[in-house]
Image 1: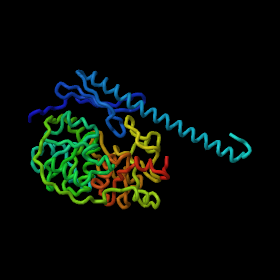
Image 2 (image 1 turned 180 degrees about the horizontal axis):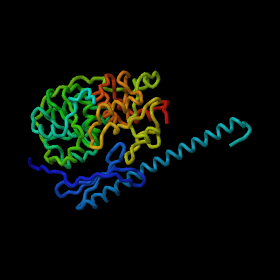
Image 3 (image 1 turned 90 degrees about the vertical axis):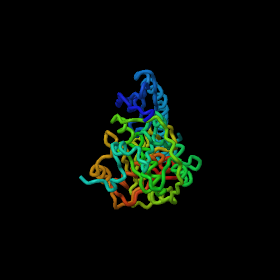
Image 4 (image 1 turned 45 degrees about the vertical axis):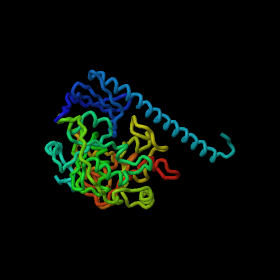
Length: 104
Length: 279
């Protein structure tokens, strides 16, 4: 069939990028070196890269993945801070109910 | 070992390879990564984009009947065509397409077991040519509501009980530690899960090669949590696609008679005012 190719040098490995487990898939189609980085759960694509070599494709994908994972880390940190703040406010509310004369 | 309840809905890569020129079979690729199809696909397969061709982005709804008919027509599919769906990431979005085709009553829809991952790993041929099928006149059936749970039904299930609520997201999403899978955009206000829901991440149903685990393993996975065929079940995730995969497993591989996909999922429930949640 016209335009048909077979993927070659297919490799798939797990790694960790900035604390996040990821799956890195590399292969070549014709002369194109391709790399994709997925999160491990659920396995959604985070970033892809393409380059003249396998290493270049992976470096591009890693750089893009880092940017996106940094946003998730910021949200996770914000959520944790929010929960800690709410917990502190709950503690103060309970304390003020036990000791109505105190302010805070 | 017991066999799947409806094993006819699964085909393997070799089966597809042998029939990819068969005029009675239409193969469609549906990926998470919308760029994957253009890198190479099963020769002869059409590509469907889940985010534009398999949903109504304006209403936030499934594909309207008329657009489904158009998609099937443009893809050269007739009512009697065998439609084989496959995609990346263990057929994640292929299952989303499968769910919608069943909602609109297409009789013969199948998933290629293992999906794109297995096809590529086996070194099978990939084509770059985008097929231009002869359009058909396709008439879908009215949407079957028995495959889909809308908000009111889920609210009732949470209040009254008696329904297995299955959250198929990752444990970190289930507990509210994160609001969306790592690297994906946040789309809800609160983290957590539906009260009473059981957490069975969708990917646990697949083996390393992307194929579905055997019946007995799947049955045990859910049964150990009390998710059994004698009880109605509703699966949900973040936007309803991961849960369409679990819906497929419960309905077709395990034979649950009453299972629905709640496609509003956490992006609906997690944003609702006064909706109870657990973390």
